[in-house]
Length: 187
Image 1: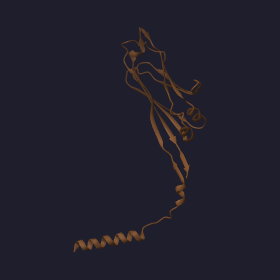
Image 2: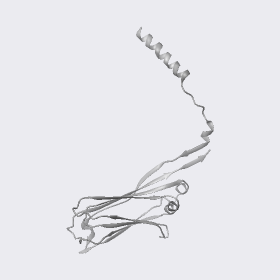
Image 3: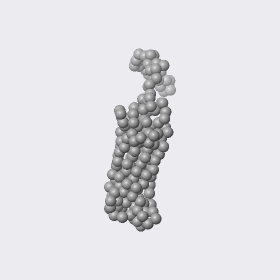
Image 4: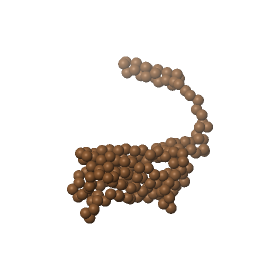
């Protein structure tokens, strides 16, 4: 008896939802306009070195430079649909020496398109000091960013206590690119 009453209530509520439920007119023309706006994050540069690695052959190495080739931007999809980009940089310094980190964005003829510098403070107690920087590319800076084929990063030790093979601490650098796309297609 209880099962039969439950079944009747179930049918009543089901029919009630079916006939009284909210409805909205469906616009079938919206299928003709497709738009998606994904956000993609990817690692770009990473570097870590102990303080002793800045002491080579009995001499302090005060400038370190390297580069990363970026072939991903040679793509019409990115050129047409990238609407904003962010270069997010984090440095961790536990060396008792401040340094500048310069990031250069260059094209295939090594022409400088964009550049910025971040200063990481010294760590007198050899504890980790974190510095974060976000470089945003929109408008004309985004146009330059899309033409970038190489990132050149230069780490320059600033004046301070000398570094030798026994100096404590390390430097960690990591960065990521955050890419904002907007893709539209009319069908």
